[in-house]
Length: 359
Ligand SMILES: *Cc1c(COP(=O)(O)O)cnc(C)c1O
Image (cartoon, rainbow, N blue to C red):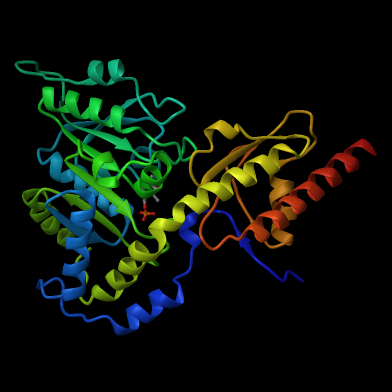
């Protein structure tokens, strides 16, 4: 019988806290599609202020936030967007920018730290004046923190550089900032400064910040007014949405300050994994709350078997390849949970190694 669950698959698995549930129960609400929900209005204006932009819009998910943002910047069908080949928009969002928006993706290689080489970005820009063959570049997208690169932070200097290039070529810059507050905490840079160069940012409230549902996009007033129309088109207009915004408000107040602790726990977890023979984590790359660990060749441990063993002990992790596993820390994982998970992993590895040696 499993008596506890330590869910390390993602920071999306966080459950709303008592304070969030209370705020939801007491939220003052009205029809937000008609524009009258006071809690949504207050939350959006607070997010705009924190992010240093003119306006904000609550949307059902990060995926919709990115889709709306890209489509607003690329109003003309056949526009091109430059984005990293390992980014969330390109890999995990069903190709919505092309299937729904008619936007063409021009991928540039993502470096291990989540950036793309500036020279490659510049080389990818296409201004087809008079040319019959090329789509027109209208947008560059960055991701911060970069999830598939292990939650690496993209620096303010780099972001500013990309912003300058975008400006120089008359392009817009969008940041998929699903975990931008993690980047801000880890870099020690205020979030509004980190996204200063961006024309739009999408921020997930339902990742490490722990809200049950929702993301926010921020940008200029005119960007947000177009975004609002598109949100309605996509079926994302929600009536008494203040119920959700109330929870997101609590996430903002209570949980932004806790992210640093998630990062500390991730480092502790990574150090523990490195003590286990047969496993390896590049600890320098653990900058925020995400860890990728590798199973070394010849260790006789299979990812599948390891994850199955752990699941039987109530520990959930996400296998990402034949030799690596992803762990994500969040505020509902305690140090005790980490010690328990590490001891189960150690036990599993020893058992598999012994089993194989005995053959
Ligand atoms: C989770 C995530 C999204 C999408 O958010 P959903 O709310 O799951 O649609 C977008 N970008 C990144 C980097 C993410 O981690």
